[in-house]
Image (tube, rainbow, N blue to C red; front, side):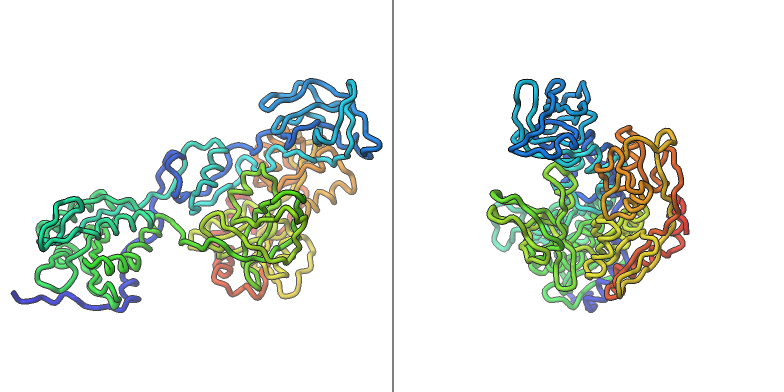
Length: 604
């Protein structure tokens, strides 16, 4: 028989370019799955919190709810005497009485804080004497208390679309009461091997026959890459059998993958069948091993024929098919396990116990920088959003700013393409979601405008969102754009009186509040939340009577305008040329983005 030459060897870059141009590599449409089946899947869209976390203001310790001011001056030698009021509040119970001035109510760890109390004294720091409580150590407002919505506020973005769901993220979703979630559909890959010489594993051995190892290798590699496998078995090396297998796989699958039948020998038929029933776009690549690979289009779908030798098959799979599967499944690449980093700020620990300090990891001028998250053990978002932790030995009380630490990763680490440190805004959430659609990941540390500018000055972030009127930028830091927004007082009755829900120190909104108060410290001043949504939800649900936030999140509330302001994005000049920073600036100034921002209530 005359040998037919099918090979036309292409450079790898050209073959890859043809493959990319011929087929869609973007994530597949979403499907809704039960949370029990979401592990290892990729979130299809941003997920918002349907409830507040915690749902009520709670005690973090066993102790006594008090007015913090009633404990001032307390010591071992001169304890403060408070009257015990009401029954002890157990976990899951609703307090029946409020904490009176000069009084205290016993509370369990996790119990609802009775109204009137603004702190909890640990039981170890008290004694009882008759009907009185002796407090031997003063507490500050907010001590040993987690405020309602202090971790998450209803409506706040908790996970971004495109995020891989590990056990931390599924645990977070479960804690929010979410039973089903929209995830990127995994690509379905129809898989079969070709060759008259092949046997299925488990069949009796036959002289001149080989067991099909490619079927197992490629099926498991497909699963590892994030795809689902539809196994079709083994086809004889003849045109009708191969064509029938392709026809079986195409209707229900996104890609048909087979191995064998790609060389120029007269007995192998797969590439010839592919050329006849579809369009053959690649047949032969300058790759060793893996030269005789064939790629075609049949019915608008990719059909990939890998070499029969197992090593060649797996090399070409990872060169062509695995990236396509990961792209369609929305999956990120795999990272190392442990990294060394420099602490962004000092960390204080209690002597006598080993402490694991959860951190964000960002790329600084001289390597990785670890930003401590700074929340307690009750915080769900801390663990879900952390990149890793460093261990503080029991004999240490402090680790200094700039100290090198070994960070143990909590999961696969891909350093974000864009590091954002500074103020929070719902418009920023929109921008970062659009950025992710362009293939750039982001890491957000909501530390406030002032901390953001400090991070930009040190070269520890790419973008610092700020809203500080009249601020003088640090040297070599410039603004790349921004938008307008309206700040105001929100309340349910339009008065703006009563209990305040405050913002975190260092934020631009906190500075606006402090200017408005002119030195006054109303009820609630010490209870802080970290986002505009949290302010609105606290007022909306009656946990507070008023607060200050942007108009966009004030739906259903009275909004009394205070100030127009510019929410701007400062960028260190030495980072302005990075691809993710350029993409962020392009998105920010894109007319389509400006229209989306306008729809959300922001101005040019």
